[in-house]
Image (cartoon, rainbow, N blue to C red; front, side, top):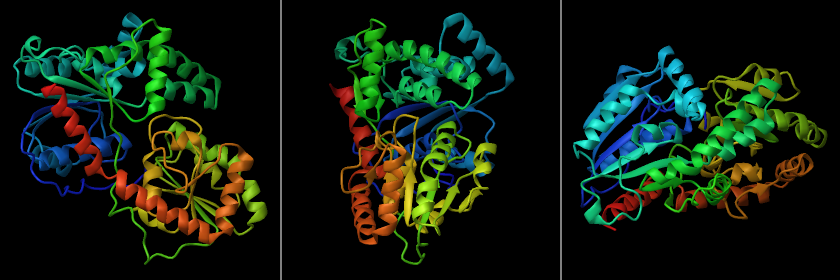
Length: 435
């Protein structure tokens, strides 16, 4: 996720839907301000559904983010009902108790708020909704079992809504990778413990929903592996639903001069996967780049940089910006954008932002996993030597860099706008009700 703090989603240019739906959205975080990939997605989804004329109810946890009254007013204006539930120290205590007594993953225990569960179920049981959309694995306990399972005949649905669980990425895959890349023993042990709980939970939770929403094939395969390992039926109710990006905000900027031999990485710089990515590049590839391009510079752009990231600012040519007004402007200055992710799952918003900006990009296979950008739009490199050589190649060959950047931008315009992805999701809503 990039570090930009966009005030509100751009109002989408869409026609009203011919058939209006009553939709309940469950979320474990405050949608605004949009500082994380999931917040960005949920806020844009609400804007899209409102523009299409659907009646949206939002039940979310207030996790203490810096939401303003303007943020709350935007949510009220775009929903029929907007209910927040306070997340505090008692929530943590209750969550840890559930982890110990019910063996649910830590993140599921922490974000299963009793009042949210009770009130959401009251509304759903009153037959107020056509669709229940639960965003993220961590909120599954709120709506588990309230909709009808996939394949249920219409005469057996008894007024129950179609329920969607937006798993997005396989948390099993995500936590295993984080554990592998953990910088110290305590974190490694925690994520290994969590990954076992996640694998067990993820192998069966999907069965309690009409549809599961996943980003890519690797996420499906990882969950299928977890299903087999835990002697569960393999997940078969999935639809694909990725994120989009703002192609007017992230766009080639002819008014901003590209800095020669300048690299950019953008993201929330306290996130473990982002921290691991820049540390890996700084240790394994940056020295080789400097050896070939002594004047090269690298900007690590993103809010809340950890101590480990700030330490990288002491390296030759490296700048750690911290929070900036608009990272899109700093991305525009890059000769090459890098995405050296070593852990994580799902898709990388930063990657589609780089692509939308028309930039030459070097990324790892992990970074490209959820996007599956086709050959000719970026360079893929996984070993330190290959990554460094790919960066040097693009810094040296500006014709190739511009060719890749143009192709990357066209790829985003064709397949990665918010509108394109949400129209597919809306169609899945209709199909779940009609079939």
